[in-house]
Image 1 (cartoon, rainbow, N blue to C red):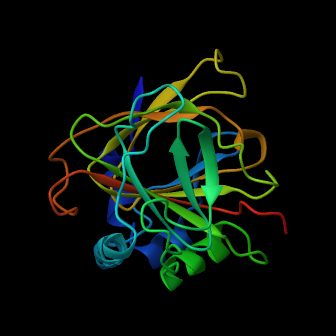
Image 2: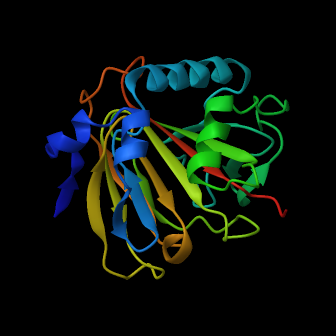
Length: 227
């Protein structure tokens, strides 16, 4: 079964950033996996999309290769001191864009503020991965386990087309469940769900007009280096 938060009009009507934060607790999908539907209002979403495409002029989107010899269907770039890259030798964090050799663009203050509110109040993130899903792009089940300290959460922001998101347990063969993440939704992997397998089965093209050229942008904030 796919959970669709859009059908709960009561949540959507109250889901400006301020109203939602004051009136609603996050939806606990599984222990440690929390979702704030519609947490970001439309102006905040537009500002982040503009920041992403401005950053992509300095750090272009890339469909990285993998150790399996295939390029990823999702195009990637990053904000902050660390980005993420992949090639035939494997996956890793890097402090420079692999194509330009330049540092990644600075993280927008709005993302730092969001992390302080929903991520960690004392330790700022050092990486925001930016994934661009177009057409049939998807992300297979995986764990975010390359970070030094899993006590820090992963905070995820959805912009643009709706995604069918899948989350499971700590083992790849554990049962999974699916839910729809819409533009403006924010979710958090922490505690018992911090190392849960998760991925994106597909997007729903045309479900949003927010992203120029169509598609979905996913921003994931994390603390990768040791404190």
